[in-house]
View 1 (cartoon, rainbow, N blue to C red):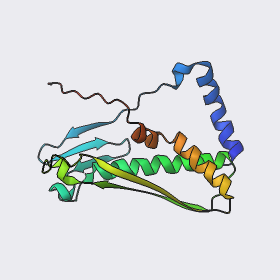
View 2: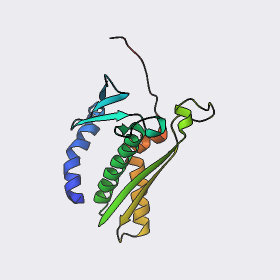
View 3: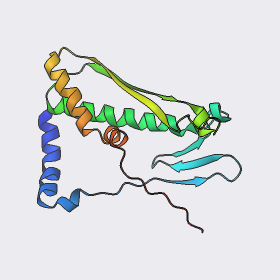
Length: 169
């Protein structure tokens, strides 16, 4: 797809959201079920069932997916799609590219071993390696706009309010 194709695809959607701002408000949902016999949660992905379990650093077998890895994978997916869309819109030619995310965790926090150890990622690094002849000013703009429009990046960075509750069936 080229920039003209992307603009043509998105123009009616943008027009609808400008005319009716409420049309742009969408609730995304995720759902999972607790495993009956293992310390795991079966997450419905829309394409397959993803079984998440304990990371080996907390006693897991390594056979199930780690939710921390899944968070980084969501960041990579969103950032990669966003970067590709922005590059397309700006006519920045990319021959190829990779997106990588890594995050540092201190598992003492989640295991309750050290009260001063944080629970969650202490730092996350996101990196793009691109094969392109685009000038540096265009690449700087590409990175700036990717950062601005990547939903998962902005969600992690901004830390929106999260409601948590427990209900009895």
